[in-house]
Length: 171
Image (cartoon, rainbow, N blue to C red; front, side):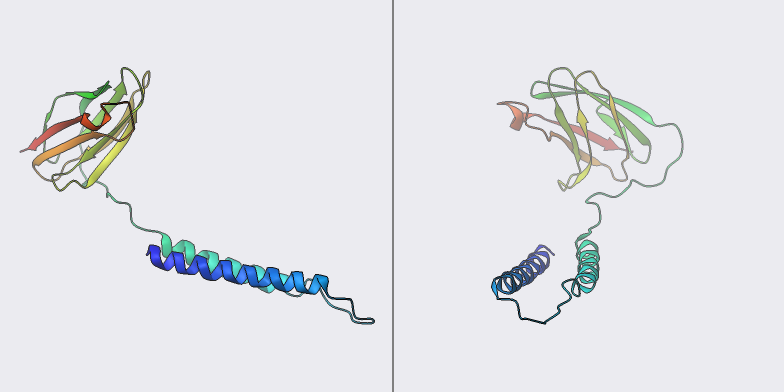
């Protein structure tokens, strides 16, 4: 998809350069006596062409979210408290049930951190910012049992790369 967008961008930039060169050439040419040119005759068609191309490019580059919504569930969500501290996560509890809605209440005790949950195949499921003085909530329902990885998504200092934790999801 990115290759197609790159090609479309290249074509549009080339067309824009051609139009610019045409305008530059006409502006430097001497005026013909008695000739009446309508300088705005290309504006409306060019505008609508750009609108159509813009809609096509926008539609062509829209992708599905990298993570979908969890399965539909009902009931009161289970609350999991999460605090990011310098290069570690404090998560309570770390053993979670399958199929029950969970709200992660995420904060930080020092600097901003990015709280990201990854499935056993290392595909991102959800994420939220962990900020000092705020509690941000993210809701998720695990549909499969397994070991899930929590990582920090925001650079927080020299030990950022070791800021990880595990969640165990089971029946």
